[in-house]
Length: 360
Image (tube, rainbow, N blue to C red; front, side, top):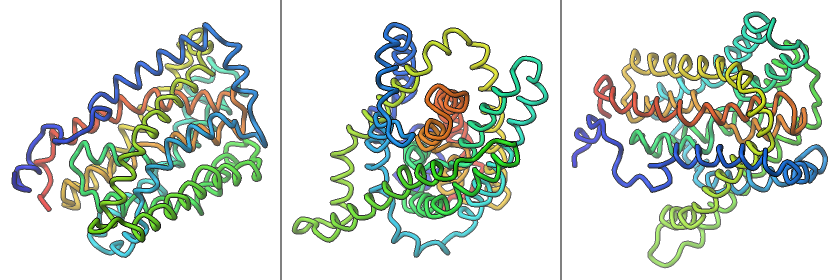
C-alpha cells in the first residue's frame, strides 16, 4: 500500500492491537466494575485508601507506575535532535498545550462552578472541582497519545518528538503553572506535595524509561537493532501497562463509586466543562494545523496531544494535594470517564477528514 493510499484512507490502521481496537469497551467495563465494587465493598476501598505515605496513595502509585513506565521507555530523547524538522506541528503542540489549554480549562472551571452552576454547588466544593479541572488542563497527554497517534496513522517518529518535548517542558512547568492557576483561583498550594508528585509521576518514570532505553540499545542482541530491542521489550511489557490502566480505572471508580451512584447530576455537571474544553481545544489545534497546511500524519497527533490529558498525573496529584475523597480527585476521575469516548470520537473525525490535509 502506498503512502498516498494510507493518507487518504478513513479506515482504522492495520495492525491495531486487540486492546486498542476495543479500548472503549474495556474502559467502560472497568468503570462499571469499579462503581459496582465501590458500592458492594466500600470497606475494601477504604482499606486501600488508607495505604498511603507522605500523602501518596501507594496502591495508586504502583498502578500508575505500571501503566506509565512502559510508555516512557518509548520516549526517545535523542529524537529531540529533530526538533527543527517540520517545526509547524511542534509549534501548534507547544502553543496549545502550554499557552492556551491550562488557562481555558481554569477559565471554564470558574465560569461554570462560580457562575453558571453557582446556585447548585457549595462554594467550597466549587473550589475543589475547579482545582481538579486545573490539574487536568495543565497535564498534556504523555502515555495514551501513542495509542491515539497509532489510530490515526500518525508519524511515529514525530509523535515521539512531540511527546519528548512536552515531557521536558512538563518537568519544569507543571508545578509552577498549577500553583499559578490555583493561586489565581484562591486555592492554597502545598508546594512540597506538588513537587513530590511531579518527581514521582514525571521525573522518576521518565528517568527510568530513558535509562532502560539506553541499556536496551547498548546491549541489543547480535544482529538486532537498538530500536528492535526497545520494541521487543515494550511489547513484552504491554500487558503490564494495559493491566495497570484497567486496574487504575477500577480502583479510581471504586473509590468514588458511592458518590457516582448517589450524585449522578454532579458527575454530569463536572463533565460539561471537560467536554467543552476537549472539543474546543481539538478544534483550535486542528484548525491551526489545517490553516498552516501541516501534513495529516503530523496534524492529527498534534491536535490529539493537546486534547488528551495525562490523567494519571492529574489523578495522582489531586489525591496527594486534596485527598482521595476530595472534589478535586472526583473531577480528575470524571476526566477519565469523559476522555476515552471523546478521544475516540475525535480519532474517528480525524480519520474521516484526512483528505483535508496535504500528504507528507
